[in-house]
Length: 350
Ligand code: ASP
Image 1 (tube, rainbow, N blue to C red):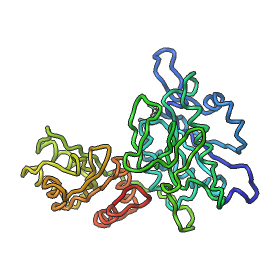
Image 2: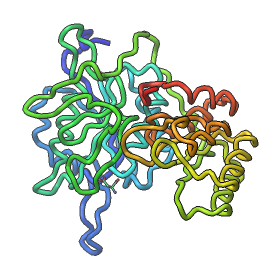
Image 3: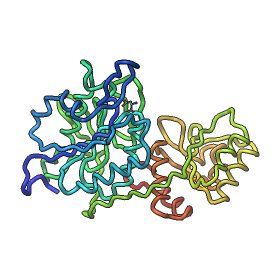
Image 4: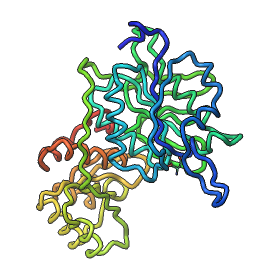
């Protein structure tokens, strides 16, 4: 666990999946496409100033994160599992578009994680003069190598997103901006660290597990989970078409405000029929801040009465991947529904 044993220099594994950070512009189309790791690292000569042993693995080919799928999460989680005992920390370079989904999925897949898995990327490619990629990469490496001065243990023992001035819990994060360098935020959880002249960790918000069990990598994910976005133009037909998608086992129902949805007869019936068919329905709010309180309004209470589960303050990314993970472990719908009532790794506050 500690960086003593035979190694005094922190050993960090970078997993480069792609994303803007390593992209270059196609001279013909002027669009950005992912490029290889050597190009990326050549643009960060300062990395040599860190006295770390750094190794890397790269996706072949590296991809834009819009192309990420659960198979890639399995790949990343397996690499972390395979290399867990040889490294002190892990940095995952990833596109920003689906970074919060990957961070959430990995948090569930890496059970008993006691080492840092820091995910970062950038808004501008590393080769551009004003890139944010260089700073993000260096800071992510420093966080992955940071140890608690009191006990020598890793400062971060969870999956986290580092972007510009903040470190956020992975399964609490959402991409908030397509333009700003501060692109991510946890709307319902404090920052894990503030990056300024120094890296100031917010000790009280860091995840700590008191077991000493070995890492367990779960690679089973079930993709029979959909997101249904409630909106005023919804019709019985469009709602039923989604809820009755063949094979669906779980639905993340994105509702208004504190977990509210229309009370008209057809809406209530469609949801009730879905729950009665054994599909697990999880209620998360469309608001970026706050959470679901199904019993606050009559428009939320009918969902609770139908057997819809409150997702409290879960992000959509965490709700989706938590369900994929739980079904992927082979639980029955009833067991999944019960497990959704409890946080697994700091993803929700009840
Ligand atoms: N489309 C890019 C990606 O997600 C955006 C980025 O990295 O910022 O891979």
